Amino acid sequence: MKQIIALLMACMFVSCQEKRQTGINETIHSIMNRTAIRNYHDKAISADTLELLLRAGMAAPSCVNLQPWELLVLTDKESREKVVRGLGCNDFVSTAPLVIIPCANMQKIFDGDTYNWMADLSAVSENILVAAQGLGLGGCWVGGWPNESRVSGLRREFGLPGHIIPVSVLPIGYPAEHPEPKDKWKPEKVHYNKW
Image (tube, rainbow, N blue to C red; front, side, top):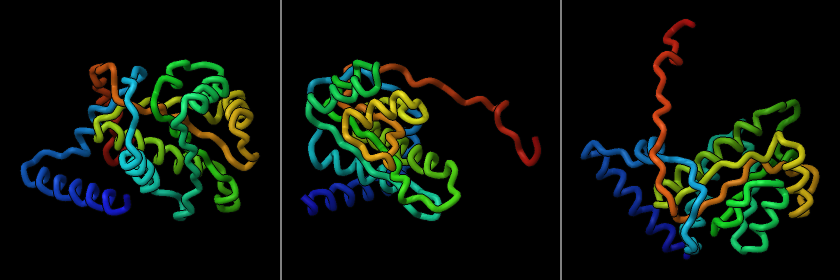
């Protein structure tokens, strides 16, 4: 399996190099075309694709490179139904063939860190969603933290220890819907050299 992952990554690197030479950038395309997907085909995600998603998530930057993340990966129906109970809503989550819950490990942050861990886990979540888009998958960001009822519900359903905080819930699958991406570009929100 390691050889397959290495081959896939090498192919992706070569493909990206070729695209750069022709002026097409797959990364930008994935970022600009990512939308929230809440309907999925009943099709499993391969172990190799799952590992690519997890590797993409863990490639995120982190404060002082502490990497305070843990990833809870749910692939069976029973576990995905626990997520819905833990969240208290969002029934569509259990219909995704894969759910990844990026969690903050509060034992891996430095003293005095108030919220850098939240930025770190947000970067992990976004990396996973953009990678999913690039791999022909779709996903949706469902909030965990700071909603205490969701955090405690997910802790209860999965037996998470007190130092683990579920930050987001990412249902992922092959899209059964194709909403148009929203154009969120607003030049008036950009400030050059002064406010």
